[in-house]
Amino acid sequence: MKYIAGFFYRNGLDYLRLAIQSLKPYWKHTVVIDNTPGLSLRYEAPFPPGVKTIEPPSPLTFTQSMNYLIRMAEEQGCDAVIFMHNDVEAHPGTAEKFLAAVKKLHDQGSNWGLVTAHGYLLAALSMKAVKRIGLWDTFFPAIFSDYDYCQRIHLGGFDMLETYYPLTHHNGGSNTLKNDQMLWNLTAMYGPLWLEYYKIKWGGEPLHETYRIPFDPNSTVPPPTSWSNAVIAYNG
Image (cartoon, rainbow, N blue to C red):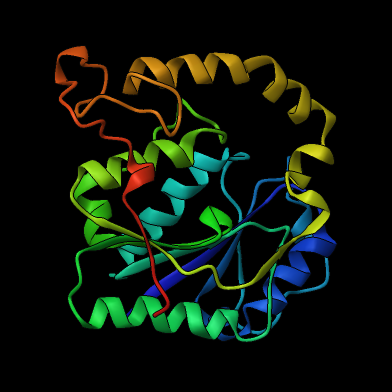
């Protein structure tokens, strides 16, 4: 199975280094997208061997970064895209178990679309599913975009599996926002707008979606179509 693993960096270099260190088996397949305004990673000590830094023309949002990573995976003929938050640390053995679970599903020809460890803290997307579902909705810079993509995976007929492999989300998570007052303020300001867009798109709030077709109230057919009831516990 061919894959690419990605981190999206805005701030919090110490956390990022911990995250990368905890995914040592992935190093030669790993890229870090530098979304800092001044491309600050070029001035830092290098990452471990095999880990590459990507410098986009301008800083990308989370969803733009996901689409960038997917395009890279397409160009390289990958079967899967793996993503982990840069303030998350995988416990010993988690990286190996997670990759083995994804590889097993791929080798078995399973109809999987998404494998996670505690949601999108560590996640793998099937490129087969991505090619049918499409890219991430960039109207959402970050929040609500994961719910949106889960709904699309579910309605696309692909399985979503949760491994619950152990991770540590440092400092309660959301550290990129906590360390950047401007991003924090923008998220607080526009968050209600993104939520309203989500409700218009899917006929309800996250975890309470009712539409089978985005933006189409006439597509509401019982039972409710929320993806949240379709996640399968999976131990590999």
